[in-house]
Amino acid sequence: MTKKQCVLASNNSGKLREIQSILATMDIELLPQNQFQLVEAEETGLSFIENAIIKARHACRATGLPAIADDSGLQVFALNGEPGIYSARYADPAAATNTDDHKNVEKVLNKLADNTERNARFVCAIALIKYPADPTPLICQGFWDGEISLTPSGVGGFGYDPIFYLPERQCTSAELSSEEKDSISHRA
View 1 (cartoon, helix red, strand yellow):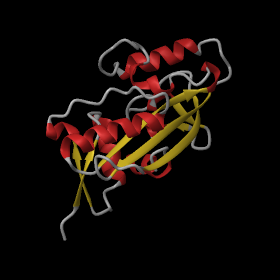
View 2 (cartoon, rainbow, N blue to C red; view 1 turned 120 degrees about the vertical axis):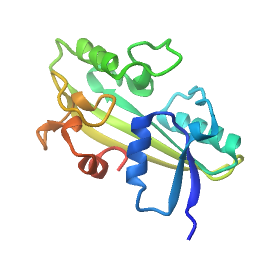
View 3 (tube, helix red, strand yellow; view 1 turned 90 degrees about the vertical axis):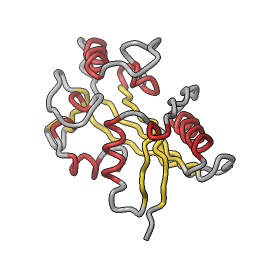
View 4 (cartoon, rainbow, N blue to C red; view 1 turned 180 degrees about the horizontal axis):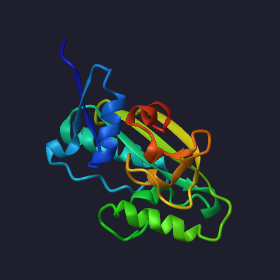
């Protein structure tokens, strides 16, 4: 049986790894958009859902294949939801490409330095566009609640994982195995 092809509208290698792992048991061949020499779509939306739709539609139009996009990020309640949709470029909002993960983590920790309120959550919006003019994309949204740790810990994952602390597990998401993270995260 031939697997159905679907383009992943992202050049983020960490995101690609996680989504491929989560979808591994499905009958889908996930093709990264850079395989088609696609430039990432400009994320002009005001929400994770809007940006996921923009990215999926861009990849679908360019390739003619169904496309899936994930727009996700960290919301820190004491920072009024920052970094939010700007999570990938938080340390340098004017950057044309994603900012270094360590710089983004450092900015969050610096902004929370004197704050005892450290509740946060990861948000993930996923959009599937089946054909370029698809008027009804499939949209899913997931949330993962936790706290921001005082210092980074762990080497797994990517992005804000080293400071996303899970009180019920007494570790950061960067300290989880890939299998554990895939089963409980905002993308699960």
